[in-house]
Amino acid sequence: MSSSVEAITVLSSDGDEFKITVSAAKLSKPLNWMLEDVCFSDDCDEVPTIEVNSKTLVKVIEYCEKHAPRANSGASDSDAEELKKWDIEFMKMDVKDILFHILMAANYLHMEGLYDLACQTAADLMKGMTVSQIRKIFHIKNDFSSEEQEQLRRQHPGCSFD
Amino acid sequence: MEQIGDNPFLPEDIIRTILKSLPVKSLIRFRCVCKDWKNLLKTLPFITEHLHHSMNENPLLLLQWDRKLDPLHFHILNHKMQLLEVQPPLPLMDSSLRTEIVGCSNGLLCVKYLTGLNSPPSLSVWNPATREILQVPSPIKFENKFVALGFGFSPIDNDYKILVSDERTGRLGNTLEVYSLSTGSWKEIKVGDFGGLTIFDFPTTVNGTMFWIGYCKVMNVDENCFFVSDRVVVSFDMVMEVFTLIPLPCDDDDLRKSFLSVYENKLAMLCDTENENYKSYRTDLWVMEEGALSSGERWNWSKKYSISNPSSIHPRGIWLDKIVYLSNGLPTYDEPESETNHRTIDVLYTLNLSTHEWVDFNCRKRGSQFRLTFDYAESLMPIANIHPRS
Figure 1: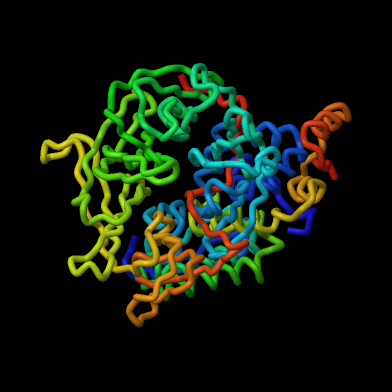
Figure 2: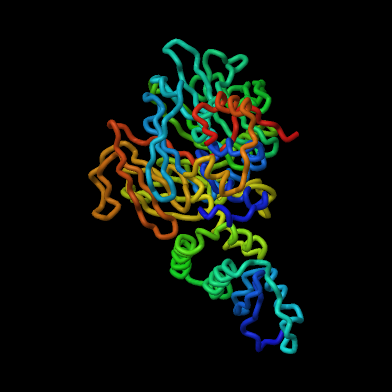
C-alpha cells in the first residue's frame, strides 16, 4: 500500500460509495487486511464492496472516525470519559432502529468495541420487554405446546408466555 | 428496534452475547420465549459466561446487618454506589434465631440457621437472584451441633463444598465433614491435630482454596468473649482436602484487626495496624504469591498499599478498586480534624485505592449496623443438578 493514501473508498451492499480514512479503517480487521491488499495501491481502480447496507455503513464509519484517534494513539482518561458519553448518545439517538444491522456489521467487520456496545444496548432495551415483544423483534415463534406451557407455569409460578 | 419488519435474523452467537448481558430477572422471564432459549439458559457453559460477565460488568457487594441475633437482613451495593434491599426467602426470613453466612461463591450463598430453640442447626444454599434455595441434609456424625467453617467453589472438580467441624467454638478437630453439592452427600475427612487452632469467620475462597485467619491461642473469658492471639493464615485445598498453615506477612503484635480478601485474583490480607506512636492507624494491603518462587519459599507476601485510616473503622474487604471499611461499633471523639473525622458509628466507608477518596454511606437501620461484606454477582447458577466435571 502506498503511504500517500489517507482515505479509501468502499462500496456498500446497496452500491453507494463511501470514503473512510485509513486510520479509521484500522479499527476493523477485515478492512485492515484489505488495506494491505494490492487493490489500494495507486494504480488500482477497483473499489471493494462491504456487505453492509448504506444506512448502517454511514453509522459504522461515523463510529470508526470518532474512535480512530484514541485507538491509534492511546488517550487520557478524560478523553476516554468523553468517548464513553459519545457512545451512549450515539446508541441512544441514532441507531436504535438499525441496532440489529449494526450488530451484524460489527460482527462481520470484527469490531469488538462496537460489537460489545451494541450488545449491551440491545440487552438494555430488552430488559423490560415482554416475552411476546422479544419474539417479535427476534422473529421467534412460540414453539411450546400447551402442555409444556402448563408445565412451565407450574414450575415457575408467575411466568408469562405473552 | 421497533421497526419489526426491518430487523434481520441474528445468528445464534450474537443472540448468546446479548443474552449474557441481561440481568437474571429478565432471563428467568425469557425462558418462556421458545425451546431453544429455554435450553440455552440452563446450560452450564452459558451460565458460566453469564456469571463472568456479571462479575466484570456488575460486581456487587452484599452487606449483612448484625450477624447473629437478627434474622437475615441484606443490602446490595452496586457499582453505581446505590444501596438496594434484598428479601431473604422463607424459611430464612422466618428464622428469627441465630443465622450466619457460611460463605458466598459464584452468586450462591450458604447459610446456617436455627428453626427452633432446641432444634439442630440447618444449612441451606441459596441463590438470591433466582430465589432458588436448597436445604442441605444434616452431616453424618455432627447432626446436632456443628460449626460451619466454610462454603466455596472448587473450579477443578466444578463443585461447591461445605466444611463443618464438630467443635462448638470453631476449633479445627481431627475429623471434619465435607459436603459436596454435586453428589449431594457428606463425607468424613481426617485432617490431623492442629492443637486447638480456631477459626471464627467465613473463608475467602481463591482458585479452589479456602483461606481463614486462624488463632493458635484462644482462651474463653466467658461464653461470648474470647482472648485470642498468635494469628496464622489457614488454607484448605478443596480438591486435595489438606490444610496448610501460612505465616502472617507482618508482626502479629502491631495488628489491631486483620481480614482476608481477594486482590487481582490473589489472596490479600488487610491489616489494621497501629502506628508507632499508638495514636494513629493505617491499613496495610498485602498480597500473597503462591507456587514455586525463586526465593525457594512456597509463598511470598508483598505490600501493595499502606494508607492511614481513622481508629473508629476497620478495613473489611476489597471491592472494585476500593477498600471497604466498617465502623468498629464504638463512638470516637479522639480523631484529628480532617475529612476522615467520622463520629457516627453506623456507617460503611469506601476508600478508592487510586484516588484515595473516601465515600461514606450512612445506612443506619433499627439501631443495627453492617457486620459483614461479601463479593457477590447475580448468577443463574442452579443449586440442584450440578454436574461434576469428572
